[in-house]
Every structure is written in structure tokens, then in C-alpha cells.
Image (cartoon, rainbow, N blue to C red; front, side, top):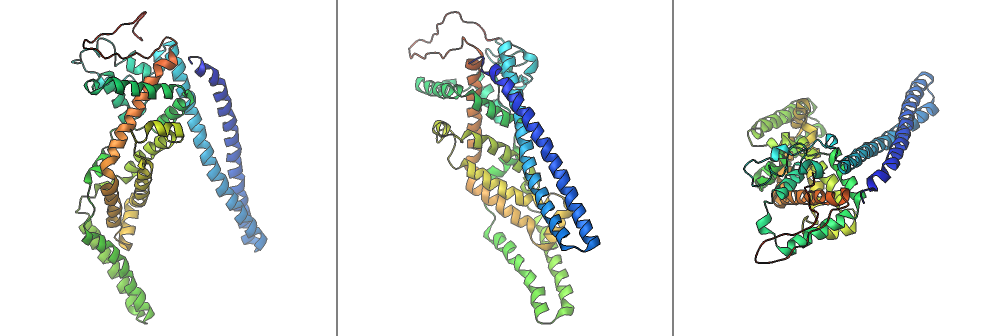
Length: 400
């Protein structure tokens, strides 16, 4: 297995170069289709020719098509670049080159711990630097806790053997481990998701009165419409200004509520997207679903993420102050956003962070796969239950 990463390196580089050429061609297609659309529309305006307008429309459709395809292709190129980097790190581990292994987990160092300092568990040229493949705060913490044996007292022989089974299964698929690390490094979660944690902790919906309020306030726009239909046109402008004023007053009152989640919806959405990318890849294979669901992840975790991203996408419309002002002039937008986010928190928040923490445990197990992938001498210890604790082995040495 140790030569796997060296063998696939040329094919990864070749695939990246091929995809790069395709992206360059797509970029040219975007440019030409845009230029064609502009030229056709301008010529159509000058000559008043319907065929030129049709041609311009076709060029615009082609431009949109090439933009969509190019965006996806550029994403795959970025993902492939991350996979090449991940593969390079595996080769660096095999060679013992710590210069390419920058994440040394120094923040987890604990000089009061019985052995972490003596055995170089954290810091430069450490066990953590050699074996960690996680790019998330929850995965890195879970692996650091495992290295410190924080859950040691709760482990039984059966549990250890179950974990070994998972690690062995993952180790048999190094391509998946590379793909997962690539997704993780392209979508890192390196800071504690405080905004997401705060939202999940709310665990209550808006009051029924506030829910009814924003729905009823949507109907007050019927007033100027009815006035226009009844022929009271000279009062329509006053009615419109009255509706806008009512919405602004409502916005002012709503701003007194604790709606900080709305202002952080962009950050929450980004964190949720990063987690979703991991979960999608993790559960894309029936074998892995059997391994991790339901022991680690709820079967509905992916749909919970989708619901959160959808709620945040609505809130993101008001991220710019001028947009927030305009939207809240038209309707009680902030109250509606709060309703969506609070509903999600009440329905999904309770178990959401538990799933995120368990995802960290899965990433820690992926880190545990690394010794077997980079060292031909790596083995799985056989756990023997006995009244007296002991261990035995031959030709044992520190991994560093």
C-alpha cells in the first residue's frame, strides 16, 4: 500500500493538466459567446433586424451555458489540485519529510499530560503532524483527544475491535481517503462554528403571534391595490407610503429582538456547506453508509443540512445594508428570516451538533488509517482482556 501514492501521482498530474486545458477552452467560449451576443444586439439595434436579435439571444444562452459548465469544471480542477497536494503529503509522510506537514497541532499540547510531551504527540515533528489528515476543527480536536486517550476509560475490548474494523475498511480504500481530504482542504472549517452552535442551542420557535404578524403584514399591500381598483387613484401614493412606513416601524421593533443569527447567516451557510460536502462524499457509497449510519450519523443529517442552507440563502439576501433596508420597506423580511431559522433550530438543532461531533470522530478514524498506509511494518494490536494490564511486541519503535 505504501507505493500507492507514488503510482497515482503521474495520473493525477496528467488529469489536472487535461482539465486545465479544457477550462482554458471553456473560458474562450465564454468570451466569444459574450462578444457575439454584444455584437448581435448592437447590430440588431442599428439595423433593426429581428434575426440579429434572435442570434444575440442564442449567444446569451450559450454564454450562460458556458458559464455554468466552466464554474463546475473550475471547481473540479481546484478539487484535483487539492488531491495532488494531499497525495504529496502522503508521500512526504512516507519519506519522513515534515517540511510539507505544517499542521502540527501545537494548540493541543498539554505539558501536564502524562505522556504527550515525552512522546512528541504534538508540535513540530510530532505524531499529530505525521498522521493528521483532518481539515476541520471538530476532526482535529477528536483526533487530538484520541491521541491523549481521553475516552480510554470508556473503551472496551469489543469497542476497540469495532473501531479497528472501521479503520481496516477505510484503509482498503485509499482513493476515498484522498478524495475526502481533498474536499476537506478545499472546504476547511478551521474555527469553532460559534454562530452555528448558538443557532442550534436556541431550540424554540417564534411565538405564534409573531408568526401571524409577518404573514398578515404581507397582505397590507392589498390596500393600495384595492384603492386603485376602486378609482381612488389620488390616495394610492399615500397608501403606498403608509405601508412602507408601517414596515419600517416593524423593522425597528424587530431589531430590538435577538436576531443575531440573521446577520451571521452567511457564515452559518458557509459552515453548513463545508460540512455537507463532507457528508455527501462520506455517504456516497453503500459500504460506508453501513459503517457509519446509524452508529455515527443520523440518516437525515444530510437533509438537515439542506434545510439549513436553504433557510440561510433567504437570509443572505439582506446582508448588504441597502438591500436590508429595501427588503424591509417592502415586507417584514427580518421577521420572516428569523421565523425560518428558529423553525430549523427547533426541529433539527438538538441533534445537529451531535452529528457534527460524530463526523469529527469519523475523521479521527481516517487519521488512524494513516500508519497502515505509510508504513509497511504497521499492524493492528490484538486486545486481550486480563486482570493485569500489559502489552508485548517485537521490534517496536517510536513512529518518529
